[in-house]
Length: 102
Ligand code: FES
Image 1 (cartoon, protein in one colour):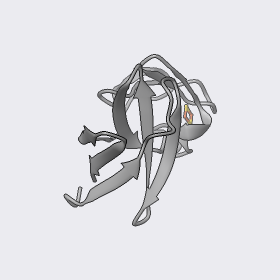
Image 2 (cartoon, rainbow, N blue to C red):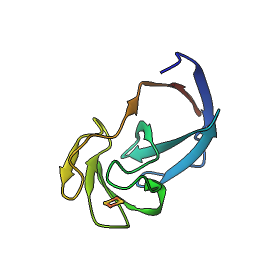
Image 3 (cartoon, rainbow, N blue to C red):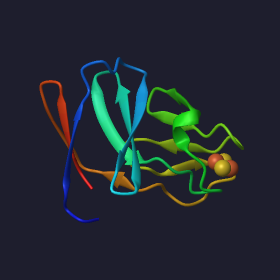
Image 4 (spheres, protein in one colour):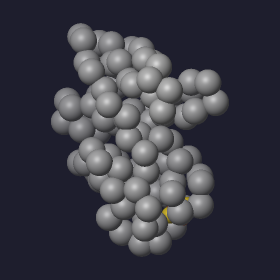
C-alpha cells in the first residue's frame, strides 16, 4: 500500500454491480453491495486472473475461471480452489465519489 487516495465516481454503479478502475499499474475492483461500497484488488489469488469477469452475489464474488469465492468485505477466500485472501482497500464515500486508500 502506498497510502495514495484514488477518487472514483460511483454514481452509475447500481447495487449488485462492480467496476474495475486502473491506478498506477494496479487494478482495483469496486463492488456495490446493497448500497455499501467495497474495494479489492482485481486479481484472483488462485491464478491471477481478473475478478471483474466473475459474478457478484450479495457480498460474495465468484471467480469466473475455477469457481473460487471471496467475501468482498474482507477479501477472505470462502471456497476452493483459492485459499489466500485478496487484498482489500479502505474506502470512504462522499456523495457519488468513493475515495479508496491504495
Ligand atoms: S483463477 Fe480464480 S479460481 Fe482459479
